[in-house]
Length: 559
Image (cartoon, rainbow, N blue to C red; front, side, top):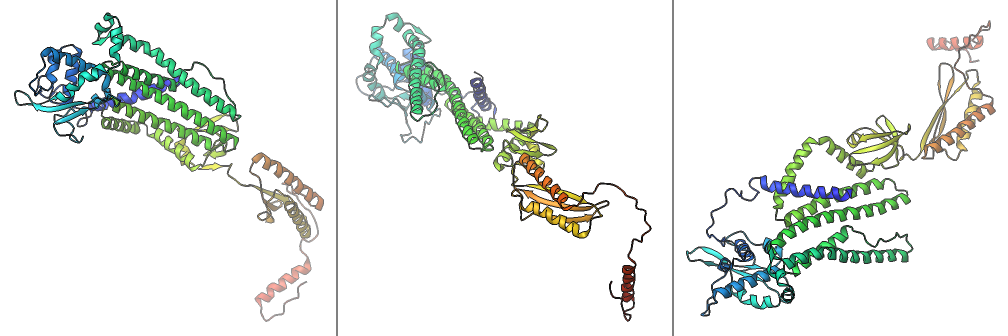
């Protein structure tokens, strides 16, 4: 129940904001009810909508003397009596209730000139009815009253066709068979039998919709079974968004068919549209959830873990857009100025945006992270001073599982602005070690040790041969340093550690095999009477220096 409640709250918020915006934005909203224009006609016949609605109110109140004042006067010699005109008004009300859609009343012009772009003469308006075998349209004409004012009236052409259409109505035979107290007694200007029929149709419509949905679900189950896919048990009675939508639609058709009052059908239609909006949002959320679950399951099976966050984000964005579109459609159907609603949402969005800059920064950061694919779920990475594995990339934040098994939540705005190191995207891992040899090794001994270490790297299948090197690096303070530089051709760090361990052990074996020794950080004091410098080499060096100073002299041959 939590999901439908959240969707109902979201749609209801859109409807309330739109209505409030229409009522409060100057220049866009409708005229204030505190200062209505002074009517030219006391019956409100100066507009097409005023004429139709005025007739409906008078006829429902059974005030037929007033109702016939909305009729065009007959032009021939035969003029119907007042009683005949009143009977005609009652029949016209019944015909309108069953042959005219409530949406047609919403489309009536509120302008005294009427609709000038409908292809009709300027003094005529059409109220479209149901397109069936006995189609019935109402023609309104604009004429002058006794005082010369322009008013709209039901045309005599329409009135002459009313008796024939009334006799063909479907409920006329039903009313004759019902007890008189159900047809004569009225509650809020509608016969009691219609109220009872509307109430009894509620469970009937729900049952029919449930049966229709059950057949669809059974067909889907058998289709999956035929293709060898897993199936779930089918519950006989299950109320979901599809069932509610079908039930509401069936009930609306029934209410229309029994000829319920068109005025009250307008209110019923508005309530129904709100219900449709909530059910549609519920259905969209359920469909997107099923589709995203299926997509995530397939991505997981194929090993594409990063795309799951894209699917999750797309589902959330689509749900938000669907809620907005459905809410605007419901507003338009309820007669609210959608332009005003959009303006109100824009002003409200601007205020919210100014007060939630960090939230939108994190939202845009999350979108950039997912679209650029710099991070994906399951990646090992370093974000700033935090290192771990990505567990989730949301609209607001990214969650990391650290090496200490804690969860760190980092705002997406921070992730987009700091240095991010993705360890999963590396194609190889560097192994860089320094071996320190003793100073008392002979040069040829050092050369032999270096060649053996190079041979170890060359014969290891996991080492990239083109970039590996073993070089005498420098004469350090207490040892001769040799650098081992090699790329291990694996991506997984635990696997790299295992290969590096074996490689270093092979290097140690090679050093031991050559008879070399690894230097220890120590200091030695050597006491000896022997000269540190060979006397012959010293004399040769002095002679070479002397030759450089005296070009005419003869240099001593090198020892």
